[in-house]
Length: 247
Ligand SMILES: [Zn+2]
Image 1 (cartoon, rainbow, N blue to C red):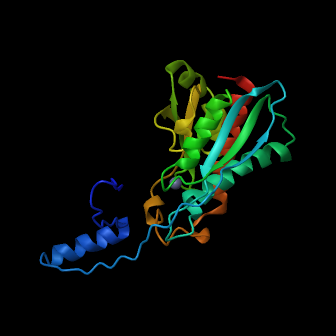
Image 2: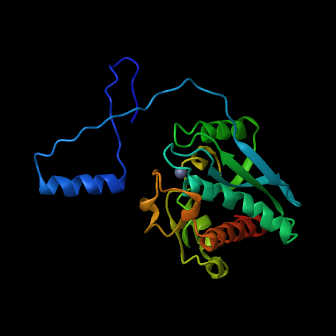
Image 3: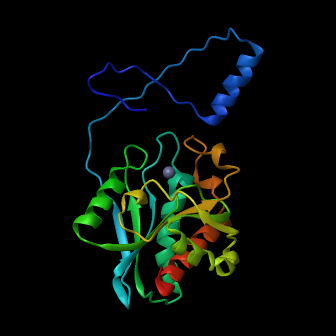
């Protein structure tokens, strides 16, 4: 929901899935149901904030960058453990796994924690501008922003020859629980990076995501460590294959 400055600002509210189910059930019992809704939200002045970036420089093609990222702002009512603490931790873990295994990637692996995804994507937009102004060559970007659940696949936004090449890696990716690679949308933050050969969205199981998404239930204890680790492994393997094989 957005406002246009020249028009009056009419209050509006979005309610979560659990609350909408509750409201629906109550309305089926009493169609004349009346509810009171009190809202206490405020718009505060803008404040300076930053993306956080770290990278392992490639040994053979350092100018070819592979981004792994998530966003580290969160919806106000929870602490954002799944959305998108999980994606941030997994992106950092990719660099950590390369270090622990002493893998020196051919291409640069860059972890980007984007700010302000939930409220305007200014971190993603600014990163895209930064990459363009500096003439950086991003061959691929991988985003994790769909919760920290068990891995199932990767959505790939690319031309069909690149997609077909990535599909040939499925037998390696299966080791971390990935079942499929398909054409699809990637992610909110990486969409602003221009001229990539592929943008990928990491896809975990979604069956329980709406129990926590943008709600007070999105807390640390709702993230299962093993499921989170498998996701980090999936993204690390994908980044490794792109780095070593190219696209
Ligand atoms: Zn998110």
